[in-house]
Image (cartoon, each protein chain N blue to C red):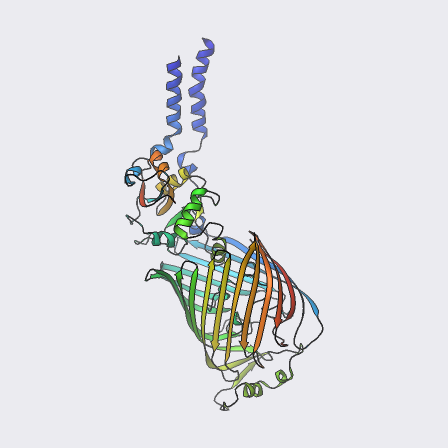
Length: 383
Length: 161
């Protein structure tokens, strides 16, 4: 009896204790979604690249070891105001790992504040990635399929732009569409890119025609600076050593530049193209099942000391087994200072949740100081 | 003695179930004959939308639509990637499995956008949606019937796949 009584008392006590020990209902609720109102999120990515390649007309294969790292910080306040920053440091001369750079100071790729009035209108101010094509806005090494970047995705425009932007998402005719319009009236900060905007204005639209099939178009008008000697001393073809104006004359046979009205303004080791140039771009991406396809094309009008440029590439990544992809890309760029260049890239990539391993063989059809001919291995991680 | 123990047990169980006691009424919004395995998309009762189209739902779960029509922020929540219900929802609404969407989310992460948060269970989804302004989630119709969550509105029912 005593035992039974004890038991009968213990039951409610035990269960009451359990109930009390359980957190209150509100505390049982999961934390609010992380996407909305976190003040600070920090992430980043890093890459290690080993190359065995030649540049220009050099027959000697050189080894190159490079590294790049980027730190990302973002957050939002009150659900409508947000910010994003990306700072990158890399031991490379150009996007395509064609050499080391002497100045390895970190570069701010993005630093902007954004206010969302609605899904259809967000206003952004600061430094942001130039919205041309798809690759430039998703350029992080762990998110791409090759160690080397197509010329089309960086040579004809600046990677980043500083100014204001209006952007948004709209459903149009049953399709999801996005747009971005930007205005960057002044140059801010130094640049080490092949094309650095002095002033620019442009925009981009992208539509999802079918699930997984995106079609985009970009346009920009800008003035820019470029390195004084694009085909540097690493075995450049002989005509690359001609003065810039002479090269322009070669590339634009028949044109008659008017001296005095269009002059190159040289500052430091860069030269400014004072005539506004116009860029048009188109891009397409498609992913279904095992296959991902990306194609981009740009056409750049002639400036005062540069020739018109056109570039295009098509790339396919096919899942072979598990996380292993086979990758093939063909690019044509005309001109790369002295003439057209065709580049074939073949390789493989293994993409794990936080790590991407790549092996590429890049084969240009002629020697160029801007495109390496050789093998590249890279490991990149995102966190 | 036995009666006392059963009564005590029931009393204690009721106390433990108190957090779920707020859940009454949403099951009545399910269409008659909806199978238990159907997916019920549920929103906080305060959202302005009475119903959602599949296209709207897709935009929200791809983080392309962040705001309800009245300007309130949408707070979508997911189940864990390994959940069979999450997989069914993803294929039915987004057209791909959670694994196939990994690249999409990696790309958005690079722009400061994270995927919808995940909650461990359908019960947690119901509680979260009931208590969070602008929240949106999904559960099995059968789960909704059992829980009968008040504060939750059924905005779309997807047939079993």
